[in-house]
Length: 116
Image (cartoon, rainbow, N blue to C red; front, side, top):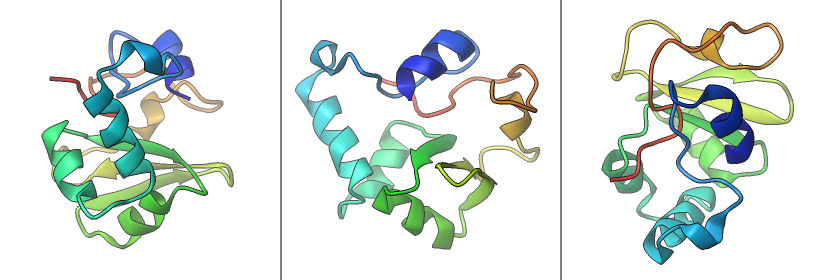
């Protein structure tokens, strides 16, 4: 998913990770796996990498946690993936910026998170 996002949305949006996992620092890989599995530190990881939005497959436990978190809003659900935006990060939904059918081009940065 990250590869697609980088190809279609860069430089307006930044993906946290893509299929080239061997290029990433082992800590980033471990943090990605912790987010994917919604480990105990998922909230601090989202804050550390300054996530404004999360695009996740339906089977990720993180999606279930974000659905119940008041700081996150489920903006899009197509039955295969969930797209969330942090409520405190902005006032307007940005789902319209996704390069998926029915969406227009992005207008702001940091879709899935930013590497420090």
